[in-house]
Amino acid sequence: MRILHVAMGMPDFDRAAVDRGDYISRLNWREFQEINTSILMRVATFKPDVIFFQLQTPNVIKHETLETLRKEGIFTVNWTGDVREDI
Image: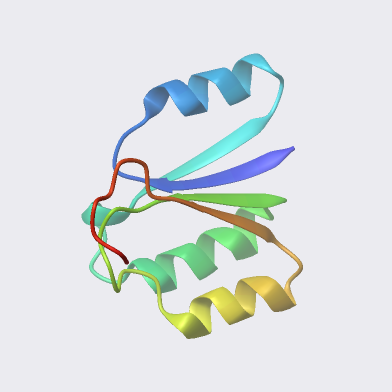
C-alpha cells in the first residue's frame, strides 16, 4: 500500500508501515507555505492509496483539496489524537 502521511510527528507510524511492507511518503505540514498545493503535487507523483492526516490545528486543509482527493478515489483518514477542542 502507498501511504501519504501528512503530519508533524509520529515517525513510529512511518516505521511500522515500512515494516509491514508499505511505501510511505511524508509531508511535515508545518514546513510548507502552501501545504494544500504540496499535497496535490505529491499525490500526482506518489499516487497514494491512503492519506493519513495527523492534524491538531483547524483550517490547515482546504475543503477543495479534500474534494479533489475524494474525486481521485483516495481514502483519507484525519487523526486528531488528543485534541480537546472541536476542529
